[in-house]
View (cartoon, rainbow, N blue to C red):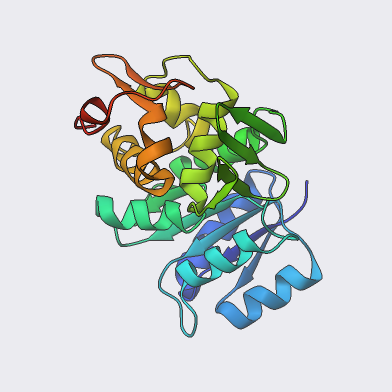
Length: 237
């Protein structure tokens, strides 16, 4: 297995993580700031990145966004480690491109379990690179979404959510199923976080395409080619 990159500015924490990883068959390397982390990445692409949010210089959040946007590093799993444990912080971290988010203090057993899970599940279910539902089209290879030929701008999490919904159109998906399939079952976040991203996705799609995502009360969400009437589309998620 390729090495694991620990990006952490506190040596005691980094050493604790590294020792436990080595004892469990992993090959960790350590970077204490954004500059050394980028140097390690340029040298060797790791199997997974354990990224502290609060770093000297550029923050872990900034690094996650940059690495997720770069073609060479966009597929590398990122687990964010931070003392910021509020739900809004977790949503921000996941929106930045992190695959998982662990609040300090955490147990090394939990960290190992999360790492194994993200390595198992980082390769998503294979879907067509281009898919269309009604007038809505998505091309995963070029990261483009259009409705009736007009381009739409989506955040990374909303894009992943839309990709899954369009690839499984007309099916009803519970919040738990969406967490498993879009975020991965290694992510320990509240199911209502799905509601937040569905709302953001509807807003990004606009008044014409947004209503294609239906709320099925008591069951979850469904994407359909038949847009629901505006009154129904405004129903609370």
